[in-house]
Length: 450
Image (cartoon, rainbow, N blue to C red):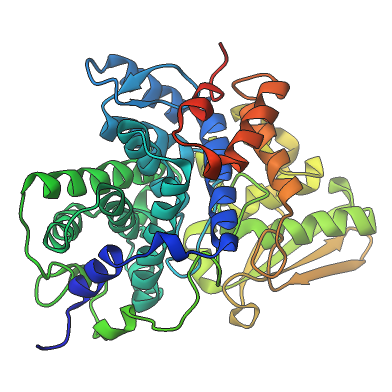
């Protein structure tokens, strides 16, 4: 028997995954991810794209399989994955994974909730599905490196659909052949371009990947077939999105810890693109430690990796989604307000004259020496003084993580966009105990105000 193709290795990984031997630390980290994702989705339901998706959900008839978070409304499971997935990414406040260079939870958690609710599965089984889906996405991402991202593909979309497919295939207990077909179907459905960054469609990428990954597994379960090596060879997924030689055996990663354990996830403390976060930590540190005020500033120099400049250099913004991808706006807002929260991306905040004026003083300089996640901010004042701050990692990253308490507070802050603080606290506690739930009914009931 010859060497397995990449597609076959992924199917083997999914079908051979042993949920019974997962370390407890892996379950703990995955439920943190689930809680964080549900929280940002509840807040995202109040965004313009969230309201559009809720209106879309209300227009659907029939179904009743899975719940739209923040409401009592139920729809067909794949549509719940679409709507909840889009809301999860609406604020760009959801977690990140550096192996895949994207947002895994916004895709997988909505798909997993929809499948688990439809099939009355336990919370622990949902977490198992999360862990294997992340593993598949991360292994693909490491084979690719930054290539797909540099070619203008959105990794959350193209890897996310394979991850959601893997998670759903695991929960559905598909056979090896069915899993090969599911991966093949998902590979043909993968899409998502960076050109839509700064628009509502970026968040739709996550919802679409959740729905299509889940849908691919369900169709394979019914007998729909696909090429059993759809990821490989001429015309395959890898050639399309990567376009360079790769080693299929790299997907085996024998002896490596689970992705959820190492390197794990990066959680956000600011509701904007993760590429901005070390800049915001720097400017907020200077504001607090040096007492710098906006009216004192002559110029602000932001030194970042050149890859960031291609999509974060936005000197003029007029709406909130653009602002979430603008170095100029986010740095100016941080200095003006002393923090960067959900309300700082409202239309009123974005067009505030003081912020717009300060944006014009922000200059961006390329620097590879700071790495892909670090940055330096240099503030020069009108009286000739100069202050600087440098970070290799933002807070929330792997080496500087947010605490459980900070993440629980983030959940409550987000959930309070749709419910009372007491109910939000109960929902957060319930999600942190999800592994003990025989089904999701009690948790889902807490996600909307009665």
